[in-house]
Amino acid sequence: MGQIVLEQVTKSFGDVTVIPPLDLTIEDGEFTVFVGPSGCGKSTLLRLIAGLEDVTSGEIRIDGKECSTIPPAKRGLAMVFQSYALYPHMTVRKNIAFPLRMAGLDRAEQDRRVVQAAAVLNLTDYLDRRPGQLSGGQRQRVAIGRAIVREPAAFLFDEPLSNLDAALRVGMRLEISELHNRLKTTMIYVTHDQVEAMTMADKIVVLRAGHIEQVGSPLQLYRAPRNLFVAGFIGSPKMNLIEGPEAARHNATTIGIRPEHIAISATEGRWSGTVGVSEHLGSDTFFHVQDTGLGESVTVRADGEVSFRHGDRIFLTPRDDMIHRFDAKGLRIA
Amino acid sequence: MSTKASRSAARLMLAPAVILLLGWMLVPLTLTLIFSFQRYLPLRGGFQGWVGFENYVRFVTSSAFWPSVQATVIIVGGVLLITVTLGILLAILLDQPMWGQGIVRILVIAPFFVMPTVSGLVWKNMFMDPNNGLLSHLWRFFGADPVIWLSDASMLSIILIVSWQWLPFATLILLTAIQSLDSEQLEAAEMDGAPVLSRFWHIILPHLSRAVTIVILIQTIFLLAIFAEIFVTTQGSFGTRTLTYLIFQRVLESQNVGLGSAGGIYAVILANIFALFLMRIVGKNLDR
Image 1: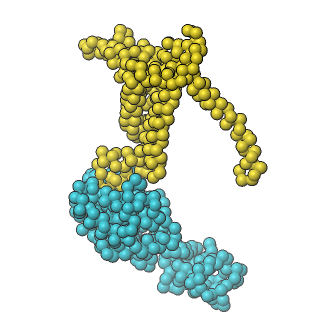
Image 2 (image 1 turned 90 degrees about the vertical axis):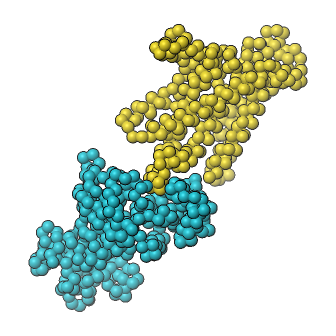
Image 3 (image 1 turned 45 degrees about the vertical axis):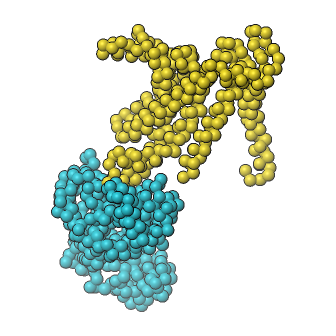
């Protein structure tokens, strides 16, 4: 069980309001990702749920129980920190067993659970090492192991992958998703990386300056961003946002079209421009097209085999059914 | 420092410092060794021939030797206990964010800047004086008989004075160690259900263990040689005669340079045994 409900939660540090009144429900078993640019309050929100910060006002209910004044350990949540926060003087075994020891479990039960967690996380061979002797990915797994053994109502992850290198990050991403599928426990995951959000989440919460901009499944956010901020934040490369006469033609202040929804041609199309930088990823090529008369340069995704050179004149045609329209306030026009 | 020329140049330039340091150490040590095998009484006939190990035997068999070793151990141990314990507590206290942190920290360090002689005299005359000392006023205020600190509680008095001097050192080193503790570790422990005392015991104390070892090592080396505090207060009476003070008395009060030198050599050996012992513990602790 692990339903988490936030009701009119606010947080201020002195005069600075970090989280204005905020409502959010996280259902049991859901993998929820808080995503937003740095300083948007996503970590603070996680720490409020964890109990490491006190709410200024409002209620946090975990499984229907009001928790906002209960100390962190009593909330039944486990947290994985950005720096892993392993205890350097203890072996992996003792690190993982620490929460059990604090809970006063007997030795045999402690051992049983540690061995079980180690097996799940492929740490069996490392149980007697110290954190200093482990690689980044292994440390990460120990931190997760320390969270698992408590059998918490929900896991909280605070940017757990940001200290790993790119290859390892992809691997750990899969492992955490796999873990969620196996445990079916509620997980809240904080990241500034929208790729992590898109690939892992059941539900994404996009935050800006403490406000929730949009809540929804990855594809909902991708298909129907509620406003310009979400439109620009979700999706990689970023959605092209076009203002002016071209937008007016669609009865909107701004229109958005994703790079993957523009057809590219050497001979004909609605817009024309010259190729600037092209990024070759092998599978795809991203062209940054300039001088289109649409404002800033337009990014276009093309097949990896399409080859245009810098300075070539090309033609672009957006798919009309994939054009997102936004009004003067930046809100989506249905 | 990679080419042959630069290496030999480096040696050449280091030479004066090394020679000076060696001279500084070796000349007095050699002289002490030479004196220790002589019967040498400067005011009573001067050099009176070589006596072999007689001085060494006399120094150890004298009735003052073992009590002086005992006094040394008690003073060093007591001061270490007080400075390390209070140092850890003070360091935790000073680590808390508070108003006027900078000034408070400077004030805490201040006693370290006071010369041992001065602090000894200040404590003797301003605090521990049985008639006019602040402590005696305090005792009288509560209707108690003032303690005659330096004679009735001589050992405690010396330990207090020296602890007051060395507490800032311990606090300072332990404070920097505490500041290097990752706050996420404490938060993780909090999430793991460790109450305040457990967090101190399982997280903070192990984190401080290196710093504590270093404080103990450095302080021991300096505390074995404390002299001024005893000289200006009890003059070695009332059981406060340490090994250092005993050697001083043999050389300057009894004017027996040979006997004192033998004691000096004992002190050197003792300090080295202790240092070796400590170095091994430190080495073990630093290995992690």
